[in-house]
Length: 353
Image (cartoon, rainbow, N blue to C red; front, top):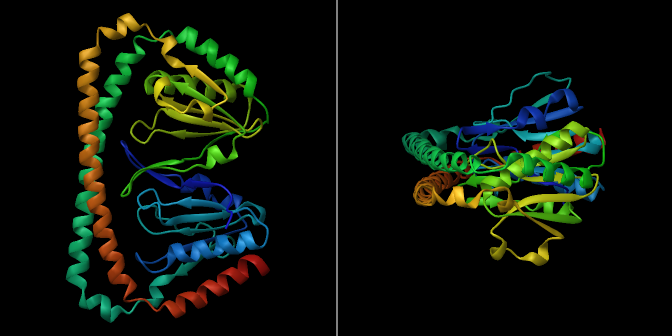
């Protein structure tokens, strides 16, 4: 089934968990917001998927927001044409009613628990949840160490960049792609998840023109950031993605007005050039001789970043396996007939009331 745009509603960054719910699902911008409360494996993502399916059947273009930890699950669905949304309101992105009844509606999936079955496995649930939390904390600790190495390397590279030259090229680039008044929107398409690094193809599918920013991700991210700054000065509508390991840095910007995507693409000899309409070599903004003086240290920092990242990814996978075990317990203690009946009522309310 053809959906609209797909993004992540939150992110596991090197600076901790970041939720974008308050911006994306601001109740002031909606006519109704359904907030699901309940445990893992209780059908929350399934309900949101059914809402999205129904929206598509009726000719709408829903925006799907995936879970940054488990990209196979949904965190929320927004239907712009109806000014309606449905979200997972449980931890870690806790969402509570701000305008109860007037906008927000609580959907209590806990009402469909077989509490006797869950109490019988109380100790197991507590143990699994504790271990899951420990693995997640370990993952984020290693991820922050990876970020420290990456940021130190970025500082070394920045000292070798001719920012005047970079800024002039960024301005010319922004002038060519600027069209459409509006504001900047953070729309995350990458995630550091229990399934590893994940990237959604929303910008790629939307774009009719693609520009690759090649060479080091450090100069490249500075260039994309400079393009975004120019677009902001012009009052142009654009969407951007940030790096999970360095969330202060952009690695992609999409301008809907000209359907243009600018993204980091790695070394020129490592990318598929046929994918792009233009390539910008960010390495030309760098003093290569000066950078070469730090070659040994940069190599060491890269090895450290990779090593810490691998440890972080292993801990995240372990957290995901524990979460799957928790979900399995809850799935065996839910009245799914009751959940399906609730789904039918909600879908009717959204599309027919």
